[in-house]
Every structure is written in structure tokens, then in C-alpha cells.
Image (cartoon, rainbow, N blue to C red; front, top):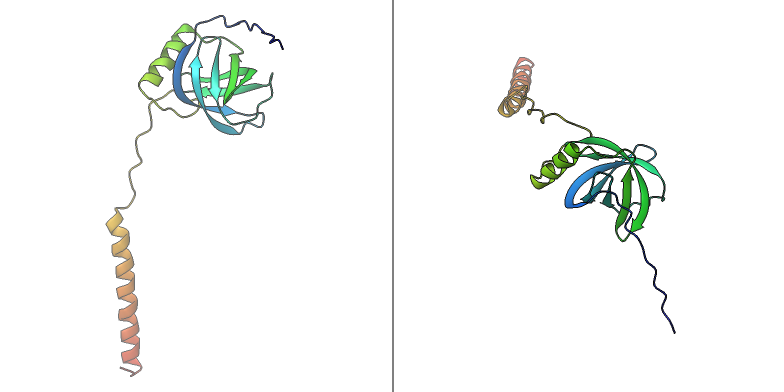
Length: 153
């Protein structure tokens, strides 16, 4: 019995950087799916996902701090897919994405601004409860007065 070996060439044109960064993949219906980027280069990335993606499909991925990029699924791997960007990342975008991953910065899909401050509450929590208690007390007082007027109590 003989074994046949096959040689697979690494066709990447840019060095890859290992990372673990959450990202959002948009399918053909633009439905968002959470994925994880395992490695990133200027020309592509590997995404970890349980989604079934056809080889050759072009999708959009939102990468924290650098926005949305079109990518093509080029190969299936165990637990994910190797993807090539339709347009290579700028070196500055690659550095920003790697720095964001290192600092665990989470940014919503496609956002580039600082997170919004928390909205101020319109009413203090205690004021709502006090209003409910006041309404109950007033309704009991009205009931008592009506019962006195008609002579039941």
C-alpha cells in the first residue's frame, strides 16, 4: 500500500498575525452573524464560525476600529474559513485592528466613534414608586369618603 502526498502552497501575499477578535459577518441577506477572526493580514483573514458558507461567496465583515470590508471565502478549514479581502487593508488599518485586539476594544459593526454616554434617566427610580403609592392612597381615601357619604361606615 502506498500513500500519496499532495503539496499545498501557501498563496498568501502578506504576513498574517494571530489574534482573537470578535467581528460581525453579514450574509447575502445582510443578516448579521457573530464570528471570530483568528488571524489577520492585509490581504485576508481566517474566521472561526459554525456557519455553512459556500466557497467563492463575497460577504461583508465588520472589524472593530476599521469598519466594514468585503471578503471572498476561498477555503474551508476545520471550524472556519480562510477569506481574502476584495481590497487589501491599508497597513495603518492592519495596525489599528491589531492594537484594538490587543486592548480588547469592542466597537459595534462599522462604528468609528467613541461610545455614546449613557442616557440620563427622565425620572428617578424612587419617584415612580412614590407615585404608585400616592395613587393607591388617594383611591382608598376616595373610597372611604364615598362610603361615609352613603352611610355605610
